[in-house]
View 1: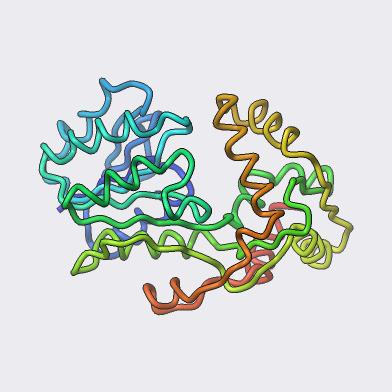
View 2: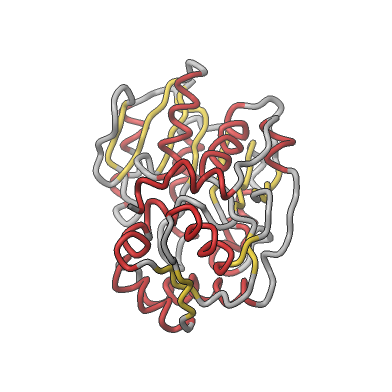
Length: 280
């Protein structure tokens, strides 16, 4: 048994790989770079280059489960369907798809693939996490460290911030548990915090003022295009999620992490205390 992890060097896949290794399950990491950390096998994979889709299966013969991270494009369905069909022809029996909490019912760019995956008759799970705490320590770290600010268009909207460690643990169980989960998991943290709340917690932990700068949805989209290199339509879609948060769409809690993993999700203050060094 080998588990193929797309986005192999990313936040969730790298953590899932370590969990699988501890369970003595073989891992193959797939990424655009084609490289990965030891001791894991790795291969080149690029959603925007279909000629790479077969690379995992020519390298490893016994891939039985795949962790799917979608491409950053509004037209994600076409490449994901093509790869999933190829994977099934190569013996893959289980697919775990990383989606998002606002998209948990298959809205917006992921609607078609949600419906496709649930109708295939294969083992599956759809992982729908809310905002990652680690976006503050791994993506927006320079803004906090150098400019003492975080920016959003979420206004006073609250978010059940979740740690990638907890998301990875849920995904790990979805990949290996028997029987298969065959459902969507809304993965939330233990408390509701606005960006103002986050700025206050950071300020207290770091001993200096961190401000939440409120910007427009259009400014968020422009920042995503310039900093992340995202296509305009996809950047606008992501920016619209900030506005949805401002309207209260993320104000909800559950016990999904505890139910699946047997442990409570990490609290935001715990995350900040463990990562203070990256912002100083």
